[in-house]
Each structure stands twice: as structure tokens, then as C-alpha cells.
Length: 618
Ligand code: DON
Image 1 (cartoon, rainbow, N blue to C red):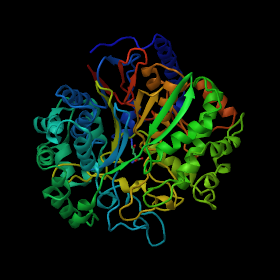
Image 2: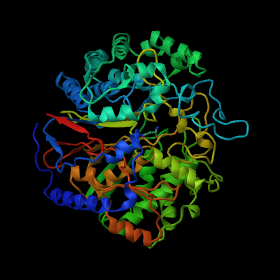
Image 3: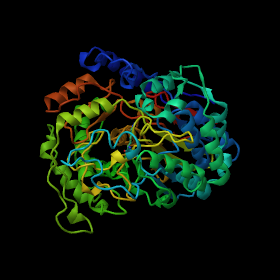
Image 4: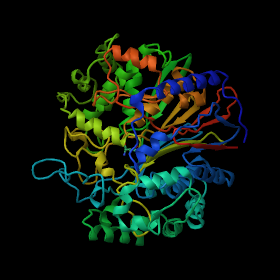
């Protein structure tokens, strides 16, 4: 694999970034003293090793959080698999080597863009079990029971990953599921060397200690694994082997399902054999809109509900359409983007949910005239307080007429700020991108939701999600990401919780240009959005787009979150314009992306240094 200079400008940008980091480090509020044994503290000391250059390869590229997973993708491509086969291989491999986020007990979204121009969105999001009820996380006074939706058996949604990856392989791959799964099975059986990153992550995973199966697997005779140890997962290996042999029915109807549901029954969990047997992957039409910028036509192919991310990204692009954004060193450009974020997140809170069961006014929200209305409320010179910006009223632009706009929700800002501050550094979702030699592309984000999900490991050696927290436990109460949501996202049997995950693919003048996405709770939307703006609107180089300082505003709490590399001068200017910044800086998202060099067609793998991602190409 060869590395070339991505763009000479990048060296300069890196210098600027290093300088910004230097400045940022002088600011006392950015580095509170770490509490021992907390993952968040381990993450605070994590210093990304920035690389200025994308990894270039003439044919194919796989970018993921883990070298072993990226390598699994390449192995499958070289065996004759296409991008979908490689993505399936990476998905199963991450379930072995990145257990905090990679999974077979969670769910996610896969966006496929085929070289023939077709795009498919595979929704394998978890579902609420049939026994789930709207107020299941509330006590008799209507208050949320702490931890009920985020830890243990009651927090688990019906997993979709095995069904999703299997369907992707069957419908869009060239190899068999067993062939795609071979690298993962090998990694689980033979073991792999624990990286410093994984060792830190185990240390942080306090919730694993509460569950005997988790303890048995993720601790080494009661002690933490250290970097350099070999980590083998024989139970997981045999689970993967039965899936490879018998297909997804092994998981949804066979012994794995029986073991999982027996465990649920023992611990008052809700998932039954019927829930598993009923689980269906949904193939949806992606959301697609085209925009002009820098003399090119950019088509954004992105995620529909139950992702909120695609609607938010397109709404923000619509709002920003008439403006000329220059760079993130320009307070005016940052101001406009923050105001677009604020409005899109306010609409997210009010209108987004599982569109199979609730009317999501996508057409209205994405109507250019609706964007013009939202834009008209932006003050060109100063911040608009979130308390003055509720959801807009897309009804006149939607097929549904009538009063859709709900009142501004109340928010206990302190509670939301505290939740966000704690959650912010966690790393429990993972995104990967693949492009093959034919030009097929896959953008996949999947998750257990919280770090190591619910903390529960099944007797068959895999962790289960706590995705139920993504539903609205109670309108007006923030979830673990400080997100407010409405009755549109209420808990009901068979419904899918609203997600921020937003795998996205961008075409330039009709040709594949960028495959992107991110983890990070609500910051997923901002990180992915900024990657698109950096690459397509601002014309940054591929790696520069990934490295550039990120910022995030989610309407409520009314705070701007910025990275340690965000220019301090811009922050100061924006403070004068009425913005309030989060009490400490944080890394935002982790974009493992692939771009295409428009001149040479080369694949540009851009691993995200924030989590130490790895690009492999040939
Ligand atoms: O689907 C969602 O929006 C969340 N469950 C994602 C969680 C997440 O990204 C956590 N962290 N990195």
C-alpha cells in the first residue's frame, strides 16, 4: 500500500491544528483532573496521532476502527468478494475485536451504493419487544427509574445485526455468509492481541462486572486484560460458527435464541422466542437530494427514519444553501452552521420517530420553502437562544395539513448538561466504510448504544445492546445523550427507536465521491455533516476533512461543544455573539471514511485519529 501526499495544503492545516491544540491545552477548563478508573478519563488523555495524508490505493479501500477488522475486509475483497462482502466481514470482525461497539447483539444501518447507480438502505435497527410498554421506564409518579433503560435486561431491544449482515451478504454480496464470516471466526477462536485502546476500554467497562457471563469473558480470572495479552472468545467463536453454518435462523430461531430467551426469562427481561422469530430487516429507500457547490453537483444519499440523521443533514444543507461558507476559522461560517444545527435538532426532537408507525413529515422538513422559513429566523450577527427556537411548522409543505408544531419542550438544562458531560467521551458505536475495485461502496454504522451495551452477555458469548434508551422514556426528559424527544418516538412493541446514526454516501457529478459516517450519539450528525461540508463545500483534502476541528450544537442544552483543536479566537468571537460553550472540550465523532480522488479515481482512506482508526487498501 502506498501513501502519497494528499494535498500540500494539509501540512499547513496540520500546523494550524497543532497550534490550536497547543492553545487549547493552555485553557484550564479543558482538562479537569481525571477520576481514576473511568473510561472518560482514559479518553481525555488520549491524544490523537494526526496524519496529514489519506491512505491512497488504486483499487479498493476499507476503513474501520481496528486494523484487524480493516484487514478482514481486504482479505475478503482479495478472495473475490465485493464491497458488501467486505463490509459483512468487517461487521462480524468488529464484534470480536471491538466488543464495546462492534456487535452481533445490537443493530445498525448499512447504506449501499452499487457501481450500477442503485442505492439501498438496510435497516437492521433493534426493535422494542412485544412486551414493551410506553411507560415501562417510569415509576408510579411518572419519574424515570434511574438506569432502567440503560443497564441490564430491561434495556435490551431485539437485536438486528445478524439478520442485517446476513441479508446484505445474501442479496448484495458475491461470496457465502460463511466465507464472509471466516476472518471473524478465526479471530474469536485463535484470539488476538489486546491493544492499549481495548485494555483501557475493558478497565472502563464497570457495568460488565455486574453480570456473571460478562465478567467471565471480559475479565481474565477476575483481573483486567492488559495490552499485549491474547484475548480468545471460544463461546463467541462457536456462536459465529453456527450462524455461518445455519444462517441467521441459528440466531433467531435456533439454540442461540433459546439460550438468550431463557436468560431473559430468568432475569425478567422482555425478549421472547416470538420477538426473535418475528424480527425483520427492512430495506428502505435512502433519502437523496442534490446541491451545487464549487462548480460541481453533489448528490447526498443518506439515511431515512428510523435514523434522524439524514433528515437533519439535508435540512441543514437546505438552510445553508444561499450562504458562502469559507472555513472554521471564520466565526461567521461557524455561526451559520451552528444555527442550522440548532434548528434541525429542534425539529428532530419534535417530529422524528419510526416512520413505519408515525407520520414523519419528511417532505415538509426537506422542502426548500420550509428551509427558507427556518433560515429567516437566523440573526446574521448573533446567537438565537434555543429557548426562542422551537420546532418549525413543516405541515404546510407536507402531505399532512394541520397543526403539527408542538410547543417548545421544557428541559432541565443541568440534568442534560451532566448527562452529556459524562457520556461525551464514550465510544460505543462504530462506523466503517468500504469501496471495492468496481466502485461499489458501503457505509455502515452499528451499535450497542452504551459502552458494552446493557452490560449483559448471553450464555453464547456476545453482548446485548441497551438501545431501548433511544426511545422517549418520557417526553421532556433527556436520554443518555441529553436528547429531548417527543411522543413520535414513544416506546411501542415492534417499533424501532429513533437513531442519530447516519451512514451517508456523496456523489460528485454522479460519480462516487465520499463514503462517510460516525459514532457519537447526537454528535454523529454533526461529525458526518462537517465531513461532507469540509470535502464538498469547502474543498478540503480528504484527510484534512476528517482532521478538521469539529463542533456540535443540538438545540438543547443550549451549548456549543467544540473539539480541543477548535480555534480559540473563533470561540472568543462567538462568545461575544451570545454563544455559551460546554465547560470542557471533547472529541466529536470518529469518521472512518473513504473519498475518491476526482482526478485519478484512487481510493483515499481517511482513518480518524480520534480513535486511532485504520485504513487498508490495495
Ligand atoms: O442510534 C443512536 O443514535 C445511538 N444509539 C448511538 C449511540 C452512540 O453513538 C454512542 N457512541 N459513541
